[in-house]
Length: 221
Image 1 (cartoon, rainbow, N blue to C red):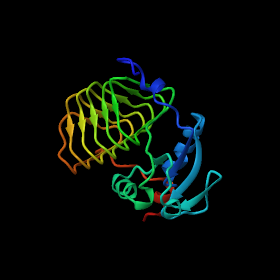
Image 2: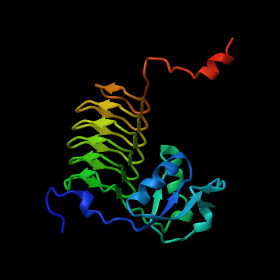
Image 3: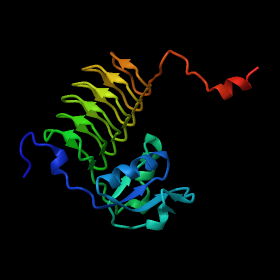
Image 4: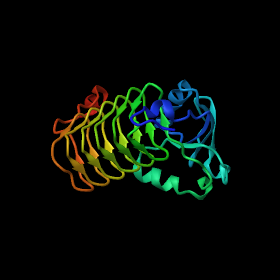
């Protein structure tokens, strides 16, 4: 029985074996994290398998059609993730939640299927939607809500009473002020401070231009 206010980190059973769905950059990042927490990667599947991923053979998604396996969706692009999640080949998969052991996640929180709480993160009494990724060092304030298929990149801070819609990407170091509502399919650039509501589909980017690499600058005339 879950005790009021107890930590999800100690109450969610660890996944002993999991199939990665997606073999891109994020899968590279996550494999070592999952293994460090004691979860073995049984399979890696992708729509366009190319070689191996950290020593694991990458198979096609259709090759595991009908499999009743614990699976984890490594894809963080919201549109692609949604499409892959609905693939018939994955219809029988289970999508457990994954919380890294050194996180603090309040027992008052609600964590939906397939969500990921990365290392050194803090989640208070928040509502986390399906297949949301909190990468690392994220702080999620009281009564915050994050919609499904959203990604919160490292060191981003979501203050209390924030509402983040579906399919959003909050970049590294961003801070969302208390009480702000961010609509569906929004993107917030790195290190931005968001003090006001954002309508669905809005993209907020830093005003400082990105500095190009020297090799690119040398090629310009």
